[in-house]
Amino acid sequence: MFSLDDVKEKSPLFLVELYVQTQGDPSTTVSWFDIGETMGLDREASTRLAENLFGTGLAEIKTLSGGIGITTDGVAEAQQLGAPITSKGDPGLVLGNNTPVLDEAACQAVEKIAADLKSQMGEKRLDFDSLAELMADLKSIDAQMSSPNSKTAIIRECFRSIMGVLQKTGDTDSLIPVKTLLGD
Image (cartoon, rainbow, N blue to C red; front, top):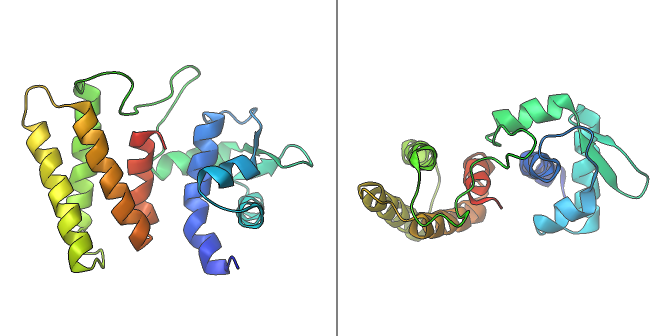
């Protein structure tokens, strides 16, 4: 059963996923069931999360068959949560767009997210193995970032591993920028 705590925990991720799928365009309609499926949720959980966003004014019902749209308040909130600021035709910064080496903008994004994760490590209640895994991935990212040609694939896989650790711990605040960078 999907509890009130689950709704509070997953609502920011649901909002960011809505933002990504609509590309921040309030006139676009997507299925809240598709958003939930992307997050690994069943139809009931997806409905509860969508209803929560309706109640807070961050999303609106577009169709009776599960169509949902993001509001302008929802766009602002999603961007505040770490979703990329996009314009039509610009999907935002995502690692893995067939570029073998990171460009300057990608390097800056990677360094910011890695620095944020490092500064928050003490606050995360991680077991020893999870902490060791997170530290190893961050060290791998640091090693790649010291190269004049930081490899996109290696950085991307380190962040995928970090995403797995963060998902296990339920750390949604740190997970949003990582998922955004990965395009997940």
